[in-house]
Amino acid sequence: MSAADIVQAQVDAYNAQDLDALLSFYADDCILADLNGPVRQAGKDAVRARYAELFKTYPHNRAMIVNRVVVGDTVIDHEDVVRAPGGERFQVAAIYTLRDGLIARCDFAR
Image 1 (cartoon, one colour):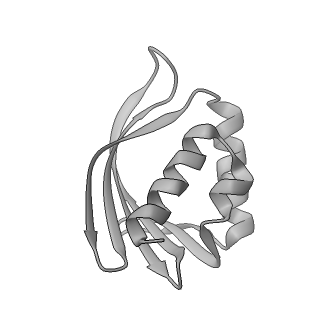
Image 2: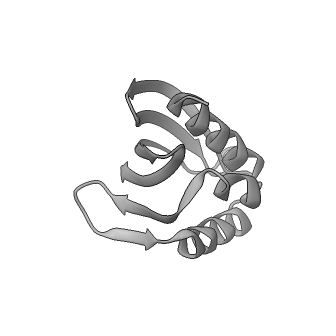
């Protein structure tokens, strides 16, 4: 799978709120961080806890890809995120860094 295919499969699992499928695309030592800011989660267990809580809190949460840029093993997605029909909506840039076919890091700009 290409870097874009891996990220898209991860987005599809996120939108389906399939936690196990989502995590299958992440490295064991993955990191989620704010762009130019602090690391929010380090390691697959912390990422699992983050998304389990998010899916519980926002069962209708979805991310639509507005634009995608791929440069080697880096994928940058501009996402339009909707928490619930008629609910909170926001834009985010997700910058995925892949290593050995898995997401090693994702930096979020919001």
